[in-house]
Image (tube, rainbow, N blue to C red; front, side, top):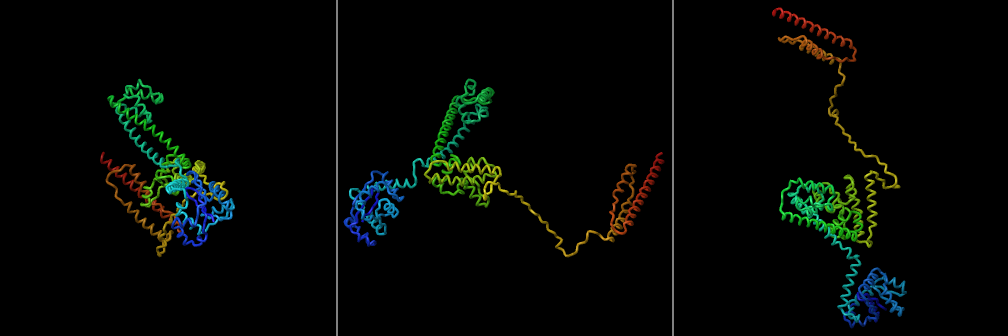
Amino acid sequence: MLVLFETAAGYAIFKVLDESKLQQVDNLYKEFETPEKANKIVKLKHFEKFQDTTEALAAATALVEGKIGKSLKKVLKKVVAKEAHEQLAISDAKLGGVIKDKLDVSCVHSPAVAELMRCIRSQMESLITGLPPREISAMSLGLAHSLSRYKLKFSPDKVDTMIVQAISLLDDLDKELNNYIMRCREWYGWHFPELGKVITDNLAYCKSVRKIGDRTNVAGSDLSDILPEEIEAEVKLAAEISMGTEVSEQDIGNIRHLCDQVIEITDYRTQLYDYLKNRMMAIAPNLTVLVGELVGARLISHAGSLLNLAKHPASTVQILGAEKALFRALKTRKDTPKYGLIYHASLVGQTTAKNKGKISRMLAAKAALAIRYDALGEDTNAEMGAENRAKLEARLRQLEEKGIRRISGTGKAMAKTDKYQHKSEVRIYDPSGDSTIPSTSKKRKFEEVEDDEAADETATPAVKSKKPKKEPKTEEEEEEAVTAEAEETPKKKKKKKKDKKAEAEEPREEEEEQVAAVETTKKKKKKKKVKEEEEDD
C-alpha cells in the first residue's frame, strides 16, 4: 500500500511495510512513538518539493477544492503508475474519486488511513530526510499566510482603512477651512468691509485679498484672472467709497499669509477628494454608484470596515448614523428615525418629503446587497449597482407620478384602487329612552290654547294703563309711540280646529278697542295743548 502525504514543502509518497499494524487502529500511535519504530512501519518512496510559495499555494488550493494540481499529477504518473497494483491511501475521499477517474488508480480512505496520517505527521521530520526543521516551519508559515489571503480574497487594493482615514481627514479639513475663511473675512472686513458682500465665493475672496493687499491698490491691480468683469468693476467702485479703517503693512502681511493657508488647504482638499473617489471606485464600486463616494465612505467609516458593514442588515444600514435619535425614540416610545447617513444620498435628496422614507428604505435594501457583493465578490465592476440604481429611479418616478402598479397579475396594468376617504360617524346619545314618563305631544289641546289666550288678554290692559308722562310730547313722538305699541301686540297663529271663526273674531275686537283707546288719548292731548296756548296768550 502507498500513502499520499501532503506537506507545505511538497508531496511525499510512503510505502507501508507492515499492513497488519493498520488493523489495530487504537494502538497504532504506539508504533510511532520513536523514529525507529516509525521507520519499521512506513518508508519514504518519493518526495516532490515545491519550487516556491506560489506553487505551494496553487497545490494547496487545488487540494482544498478537491482537484488534481499539476505537481500532484506529475508525481502520481511517475511513481504510482509503476506500481499500479498497489492501493493509494489518501486523506480526502473526494480527491480519491477524482484520481480514480483520471488516472485509474484505486484509492483507499478509512479511519485507519486517517489515524496513519496523524502518526506520520507526528514523525514527519524523521521520516522525510533532506529537509531541516527550520525550513519546514518557514514554508508552513508562508503557505498559511498565502492561503489565508486567498480564502479571504485579500488584495492590497481592497484596504478600506485608507478610506476610513481619508473621509475623517476630509471632514476635519472642511471644519478647519470654515474657521480659517470666517477669520479671514472678519479680519480683512475691518479694512475693506464691502469686499465680503461683493465676492461670495470663499476661494476667490482669499485670492483677491492676497493680490490686492491694501484697498488703495485695487484701482491698479488686475483681477480679471480671478473675478468676472462685472464683479471686478463693483470691487473697484466699492474700494473708492469704502468705510473701512486704515491698517498697517504688517497686518496686511498676516492676512495674506492666512489667505495662503486657505488656498493651500483648499487645493489639498480637492486632491484628497479625488483620491477618495478613486479608492471608493476600486474597493466598493457598486456602493459608490448607488449612494455616492462621500456617503459610502461615511458608511464604511461608521461601521469600521467594509466587511463589518457587509454584516449589517438593510434596516441597520438605513438608520446608520442616527443611533442617538433611535434610542431616544425607543426610550420615549415615539416614532423611530427613517434615515441616518443615507439621507445625504442623491436619490433621497431629490424626492419629496412624503416619499423620503420609502426611498431610503429601498435604497438601504439595495445598498446592503451592493456592500456584500463588493466585500465578498470577486468581480470589480459596477454593473449591479447601475442596474439597482436604474430600478430605484424608475420606482421613484412611479411614486412621484402616483402610478403604483399592482404586484400580482401581468404587472402592466395600473392598479384600480379607489382613493381612501376616512368617514367618521358621530352618534349622538338619545336621552328619550332614559325616562319612563310619557312625553307630551307637540300638538296642544284646545283647552290649553284657550287658557293661553285668556292669559294674554289679562296681560295686555296692564301694559296699556300706564300713566302719561308730565313732559309734553310732539306729534311725531306720539305717532312713533303708537306704531311701537301696535307692533308689540302678539299675532296669534290660526289653529286648525272646529271654532276657527270664534278665534278669528277675538283679535278683531281687540284691535278695535286699541284704535279707540289711541283716538281718545289723542283728543285729550290736543285739548291740553289748546289750554296751554290760551294760558300763554
